[in-house]
Amino acid sequence: RTQAGELVRFRSAGTQVGNIGVINTNNITIGSSASNHSGLQFGTAVITPMRAGSESDAQIDIGFSNARFKDIYLSGSAFIDTQTRLGSGSAATPAYSFSADSDSGIFRATTNALGFTTGGTERMRINSSGNVGIGTDSPSQKLAVAGNIQATGTRSISALYDSNHYIRIEANSSGGVF
Image: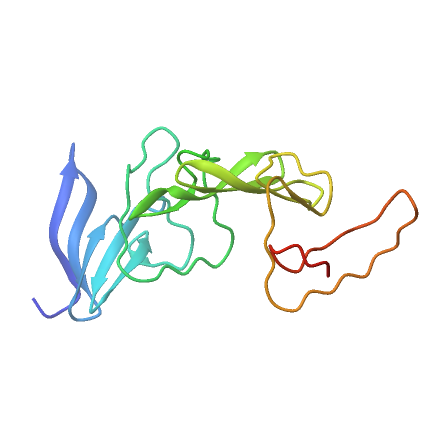
């Protein structure tokens, strides 16, 4: 068929409940003309949402709270115009992870805190105060590191200190003082 219109009608108890049709000369549609029903239009390299039998640029839900799709796989890019909401996840199964490395990524560590994980173990956290902890999940300063730190390149420190507070930096492992 090359003209717009219904190809197949679906009825229940004598009332039309849906259809398969053609729109815009050669695009296939699956949907309903009922005002509260959604559908899809399959065109050349595009699938567009429909509502009440017409193209729609409004929200079309895929599933609902007690009947959802388990997985949706996309090949290529996804553009999300507003906010993306993910589950909290954990260090072992972060909410944001990678198909080839599912135990590395980002998760919600606690209220207003992000956890960063590799190999299923939390490695870094940004807390609600904006403090960053590496190797610790409770940073109390802007940067808190539990473990050794290595710096290469030009090193320069400017600090205020008194007789009780000072800093010593060694330029290399041979014990030279910087």
